[in-house]
Length: 288
Length: 238
Image 1 (spheres, helix red, strand yellow):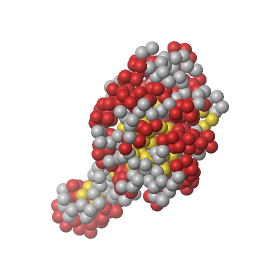
Image 2 (spheres, chains in turn blue, red):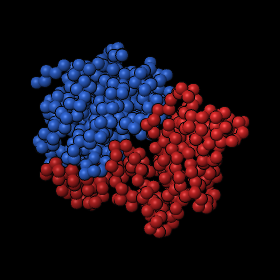
Image 3 (spheres, helix red, strand yellow):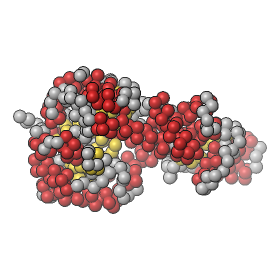
Image 4 (cartoon, helix red, strand yellow):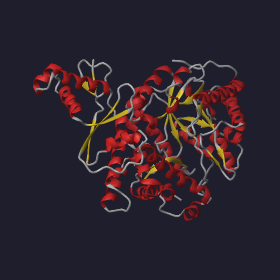
């Protein structure tokens, strides 16, 4: 039984969106409809020029969180210290509320895949991931690290436990937070045939600091986690189900492909907010 | 299966070094699902090249570009967390292909690729352009690119929509690339005498009068060169 302080003591930021290049010019005029921003860590590690300017303004005007794809926490290759140094510098510059990455390996044997490959749910992988999460957390003791459940398209024969058990054990043993991607739960449940609500119930929800929601593409034989479409009603329903159990957790709309206009993005964020308010009631988000 | 063995298998799949069916059997997974990862990894690199080397791609045409991509993917795997950097090694790769006499390639193609990659590095140059320096200063993102082909006039014409022009003759060329202080876009110019003079005068901290005296040029001409460099964003003034 977990006895952690809800959300690891982190504030409820409300309903936010990912900061994407086509929206750089307009997003700052809509603080009334966007409560916080999430940046893709790798987009700002070399931040000269326009990215630096936008990042500094985002950090000044919105609560900000970092979300990465290149940590490769499950890789058998050593942690990339150059990458972590760059992340540290970014964290020191913008002081996000927290930073996150995925339970996956995105590089190995000297090659960057720029994609999220699933780790096997084995005792060996569990020990490995726990140790590495502890290492990265030790670098930033005052900025919480969250691990996200990724979408995955294969279930290895080698698996020795379920995903929920694996995630729960990582979070407990490494004492980290979770970024629960509700759309990924839905996608995985459809692709691998399980009950998404039972999956959520099996997680240590008091460790969930942030939620992701997104759209996907249903190809019939498989659902692809594209982040390129509006949420479908079942994902809204699963978001409501989750929030009713977690209480207020910062909820972020991811839209990374086939990027919509800013107006369209804001409408979609309004819809996510409406689902959240339906589950939680009106709750004022945290402000700096 | 150990974590190392599993990750090596997945690595071989996405590097296209092992057939998906064979790897899927070893992993106990659906080959069609496994191929999703191979296709995604390939797609990411292709997108990085298509995005950052758009003129090179257009000059080469879809067939040659596609064939080069296949060989590049095998020869130069991405090694940086920065996705755009997946394109970084392409100019040198292309130059090697030219040197080796690969049909349909021209040295000018490699120069354009080098130029396009340099544009990206200027856009992401870590230097901060001072908004109000104490004295006239050179734009700190200024990058000089020496090439054996006149890429700048070709790209200027390209941007005007003149896409059918023949490739130019070889000619030693120096290009100036820098990030504009206001628009933060990458500007580029052929390094003509006035711009080089303005760079030298600013670097040597000479005002117009001192630069005119030192060079023997007319004061009006010197002022014109310095003003022009400032208007372009090459020189930042207080």
